[in-house]
Image 1 (tube, protein in one colour):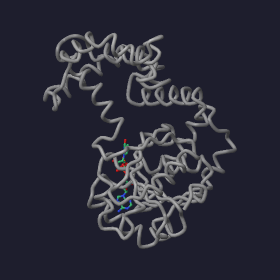
Image 2: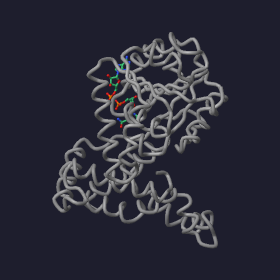
Image 3: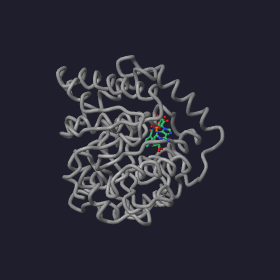
Image 4: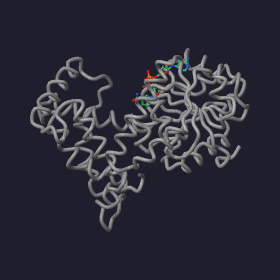
Length: 321
Ligand SMILES: NC(=O)c1ccc[n+]([C@@H]2O[C@H](COP(=O)([O-])OP(=O)(O)OC[C@H]3O[C@@H](n4cnc5c(N)ncnc54)[C@H](O)[C@@H]3O)[C@@H](O)[C@H]2O)c1
């Protein structure tokens, strides 16, 4: 199969991640079958899709007339056979457990064509293990999204030990064709790329706070109004390329090496967060929220609304919306 042949997709499991994938596929004009275990689950997915569309409307991403059309491309069913029998691509977003995902793989294989690509949203389980009892493990991949997938372009692609290069390449082309930004892991790695980077940064936030160097609020402020602004435009290596001036990134690394080495030796390398850190982080976040206005978010709901509004503005600047 080629990427251009993918016209109809199925979202199997329609919780927080599955509903958002379904919405994204429909926004990209694909027909989508949405499957979950019960009518109640499907009703919730339908409501979440509608609410997210209203939010996109409020932020001028879509027009009022678009809503009906986008919703009409999504078909809901509690029959797995109906969901997967005539699709070319399946996004599985079931619970994060080998046991459940293996059973789901078995169900999907019963009713779908042998070349339909099956992509798991798994946050960290191995594709090889998810697909180990399947008849066609070569068509299983991992396609890890960032929440919410209908807004965040990144998708991290992973192979299992039996996945073919053709399948991975086809999935990559497919995601590119619908304006996602796929990155391919050359080998399986726990936490993929971004969760490792996020945790490396957060380990140092914890370290600075525990040492009394700064507060949770100031660490957040430092990232938001410093490197975070640049990282929202380009990655850390391109930022350093510019920082190096005529010497480029290699010049910068060499020039600062002795200094960087001093920092690195002083930085955290612990493998487990200190036991009391969750409560310290919670208190720090509460203090930070007290200093914020409603407009930029000072509770969970207003914070999420502000995040989505800013995210949409940034995505428009990136020409991703
Ligand atoms: N929540 C996140 O931020 C996030 C981000 C990236 C990836 N993921 C991954 O996405 C997947 C789904 O996570 P979620 O947060 O949407 O979970 P969720 O609990 O919100 O949704 C899971 C859905 O799967 C359904 N389900 C359960 N058993 C099923 C079965 N046998 N067949 C079909 N559907 C079934 C449930 O009814 C539920 O609607 C997980 O693998 C998770 O690791 C989550």
